[in-house]
Image (cartoon, rainbow, N blue to C red; front, side):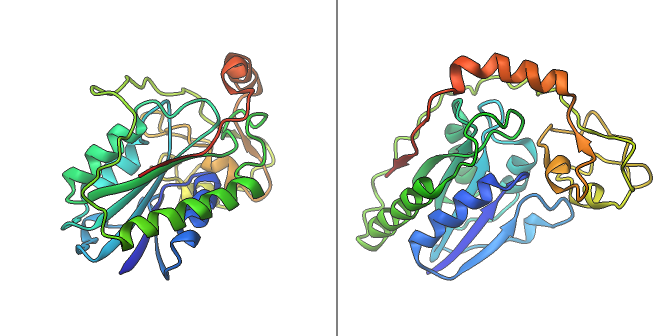
Length: 254
C-alpha cells in the first residue's frame, strides 16, 4: 500500500490534524500540498493499491473551492479515500457530503473519514491551540482504527457521512486581509496564496473575486503586517459566540 496525504491547509491546523491521522496509519507518507496554485493536479494518477487521505477545512460548511477544483481533476482509479474534515468548532455542515461526491466522481472509493477540530482561522478565541495533545492522540487512534478496517478487508461498508444534498449555499466570508505600512513587499503572501489573488507587483492589491478569506496570507507573513479588519473579526467572534464556545469532539466514520 502507498499512502498519500493530500492537504488543503491555509493556516496549518488542517495539516496538523492530517499528520496525526496519517501517523496512526503507520505507513510512509507521500505529501501533496493542495494549496499550491501552480501545481498540475491532473497529473496525479493513483491505483487501487493506494490510500489517499484528503484533508480540508470546512469553509461555511463546504469544501473550499480551490480544493474542490483540484480534487476533481485527479485520477483515482479505484484508490481508497479517507476523508478528513477540519473545522473551527462551529460545524462541518455539508462538507463531508461534498467531499464524498468529489472523491467518487474522480474515481476514488471512500472507505473512512474523520472530523477534527482546529483553531478557528479568523476568530482565534475559539478552539485556541487545537488540535492539542489530546486531539493528536485521538486522531492517531482514529488512524489505527481505519488501518484495521483496511487490513481486515471490510471495505464493502460505506461510511454514513453526514450532510445534505443539495449542499448549503456558501456566500463567502467577505473578509479580505490587507497589509499595513510595515509591509516590506517580500512576496511571501503572493507566492503562497492558494488562489493567486494577491498582486505580484503590489501586495496591497487583491482580486476580490479570487480571495476566499482563507487567512493564509495572515498566517505566513513573516512580520505580521497582514491582517483582517479588527472590526470584522470582532463581529465574527460575537456572531459565533453561542455556537463555538463549547469544546466540540472529534468524530470517526467507518
